[in-house]
Length: 322
Length: 240
Image (cartoon, rainbow over all chains, first blue to last red; front, side, top):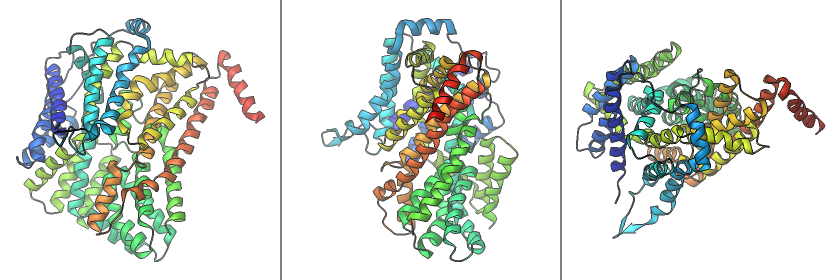
């Protein structure tokens, strides 16, 4: 059986290799800080395997995560000058290779889909080929490997260091924002342990007038969006707001239909995700990848849609849940 | 009551534009201490949280492929290709991508797009290519706007498509949380069905705004060459 952990090790190894390249890249003014950040991240991908299996204590990993927070937070990381091709060279190779260039890029999702749908059901000796529940993740991994091989054939590139350098430039342009989503998942679990949801619930129960169905729906949806804006993640806001209003008020007190309230409540949170820089992987990372001067460009493009959809979500719960 | 100070830390950090990594790190530590967790327990919470959320970072594995293809002109080829499809304007192309992204995400194919895999190498260059064909070289400000809308089509499509699929993280989180906390029994299918109305609203609203982008580009870039085309489309609109 092919395990998801093996794939995490591969990702860790890629981070470590790129960190080694960064350490010797003299065009990066903060090369040692960058190498330490990405090297630690790579190492954590390996160590995490034992933490997940409960064979190693989680505390050292926590120390490493806080070290990365400091490296990225007091910006000790930087980026080097990418060694790449000129626009003229690119136009020339694009003209020569034509649409064959798309084949490797499209190979990635194709392989991912095949793994998630067909290979999922394959068994060898009674064991599933891919670890159960991780077929999509593994599919993305295989897709990337096959895509890389196809790409090297298509562009006739023999040196594996070339794609690694090219990938590293993209990684450096994203920078510390890459760590934020994982860190927010941590914050969500700490909030849960600390009982933030029950506290918010006590406050809203005091403020909310009795029996005002539509106001309660609006408070739940707007609360989901606001908490998501603060936490950067609807998954972290959902337990807080559902424990506060969704379950006790809308479902128990006012007999709302649970699937409608909860499914649409989560989507109200997604409206918040669209407009917060805390959701780095959806809003800041694209801005960095697209080399935008205004890092809030994607958020500005999404604000009107998010506002209108929040109103739609409030209307959908009000109409269909009661 | 006092644990809510952790939320306050996030809001204050956010409002004063501190580095988000530091804000979240400090808020986590502060909330843990206020809830009377020991320093070891807080470190363990950070470690466990990191270990179980690694899947959000694995898209990095696709960067070498995309980087290699870009070195060899992937973006340039994307522009050339869109240049041949005469009727596809920026807005129509992005609305089409939004529809595709929503439909594939609803089938569980969430890793088919994404800022690194598709927006940077293909979608944004195509959207720009379509605008360039119509208006010639784009000023920096307009280029930024087209790229921002390209990213938004991908994100909106993903968010409001994926929840129609049963085995997606958010649906499993809802059933997992509610079924264990409140001892009830919710089926993923019921939740996925109730994600459909919002998905339809999202497509109509964002799709409409993407189509409107064409008209605002026409308006902003009404240069001598582009003016006649822009006015042509406007009279066609009025004639309806």
